[in-house]
Structures are given as C-alpha cells and as structure tokens.
Amino acid sequence: MVDLNQLVIDGDHGLIAKLKHLEDHRSKRDIRHPLYSIFTVCVAAMLSGCHNATEIAESGS
Image (cartoon, rainbow, N blue to C red):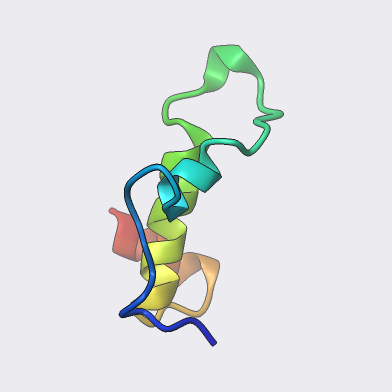
C-alpha cells in the first residue's frame, strides 16, 4: 500500500523522474507524447480510482 501523503511526484527523486528513465521501444516517428507522461497520467488515474484501461483513457481526456 502506498501512503499518498508521502508520495513524491515531482523533483529529482519523484515519480516523474523515475518514469523518465524507462526505455521507450516505440517507433520514433509515431511518438506524440513522451512515455513518462503517458505513465504519469495512468498512475494519477489509478490513484484516483480507475480500474481498467477504459476508465484510465476517459480520465486522461
């Protein structure tokens, strides 16, 4: 269980900084959004109660 009061999102050791280190295997010509930003939206959606891809997509739009 994650204590949301202690979760660091931004900064050198925050969630976004860690997600920026993920390797992106997508074709470079088709990228519209950085991978870390997509995962950040997914994490935020899940923390706010989304349970599946449809709910995550709807919350991100």
